[in-house]
Image (cartoon, rainbow, N blue to C red; front, side, top):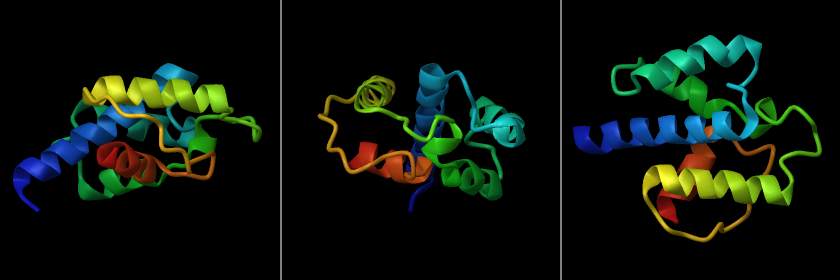
Length: 111
């Protein structure tokens, strides 16, 4: 993987995290908040362990209620992510509260 691709993936992860913050007001819970903030401030320089850590956070850590995200919330999150990635793609579905950030990022990048 080239350095440009790696940098783009790191920035895309920041966009997914930013969209989650916009939609939920959270950053993955109290224990993850500082690490997520720090990662988002400079994703290209973040340690590989931090890239992995924020990528492993499940959506349930952002949507505390086990019944969330609802269909409407998933649609809104998808739209937010697509805007940040400057893409236009329909939500392919297949993701829910158990999906982690890196999986959602991969779905968005492939859309």
